[in-house]
Amino acid sequence: MSRHPTIKWAQRADKLFITVELPDAKNVKLKLEPEGKFLFSATAGADNVPYEVDLDLFDKINVDESKSSTTSRSIVYLVKKAEEKWWSRLIKQEGLRPVFLKVDWDKWVDEDEEAGKPEPDMDFGDMDFSKLNMGEGPTDFDADVPEGDDDDSDTEEVEEGETSEPKAAVPPSTEPEVQA
Image 1: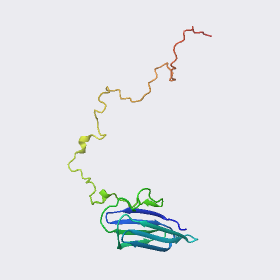
Image 2 (image 1 turned 180 degrees about the vertical axis):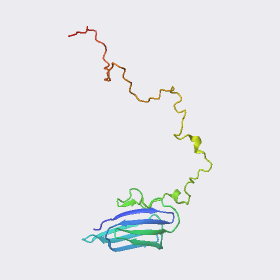
Image 3 (image 1 turned 60 degrees about the vertical axis):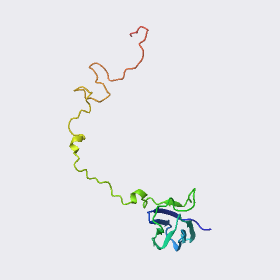
Image 4 (image 1 turned 135 degrees about the vertical axis):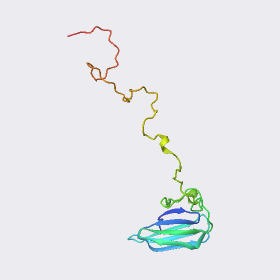
């Protein structure tokens, strides 16, 4: 019985990135079919363990313009879509996705980000930042605090003759105090 390698995927409107994570893969075979069939098989490890994946992709693909690249850690496929449109998922199967299928967040781009929209213009033109008073000079931020009372600490100063130990909130005793 064969195993499933981890498959990561990402997309653009015109292509899919499918990465098969299988270190030291041997006898790699891939078959793409125009109606969206993705068949992968290989062996890996010292025991030549067989790995296999059979996916029905969400829509049709262009087999002739699809490419692959093999490294020692993975096999990356650039699969060209037949129609330039975003797919709602990678495979036709609805519901729970197979556990070996994951999103490739390193390659992921949201649909609205790909549209060629330029990054926001960081030129603030004629905006005068000096009028924003961003921590420079006096402000009327503490307008309700009287002058000279700018001590924000919660501790009170100790008067001469007092101790700094906290006073207990105990009601006074009604019994006379006995002195020794």
